[in-house]
Image 1 (cartoon, helix red, strand yellow):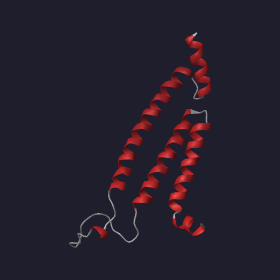
Image 2: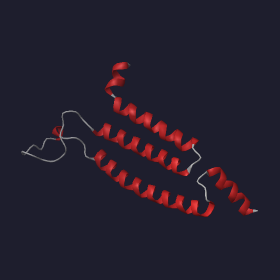
Image 3: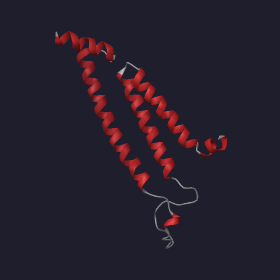
Image 4: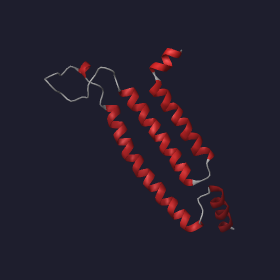
Length: 124
């Protein structure tokens, strides 16, 4: 058991980070802290994908010195997924931050409970 955990420490760190981000997303009332929690979850996912895509002893999939054997290179798909995910994550974070700024300008708070209370008062 212990040897297996040490061999897969990257995946274990990714799971711990995901748990930290998820609990932060659920337990915090401040919108900025929720966004930070979501970014921690994103980072954990990218770390997990990078760990699963890495194979010790293999090189990046760039043909050098006429080595064309598949066994000489790592799979490029996880790296591509991580890059695509980072781009999407930055876009989503920018959108969330812009919406948070709009909410703050309207309600003068970043507390979700206060904002929902003010919304209920507006509906009545």
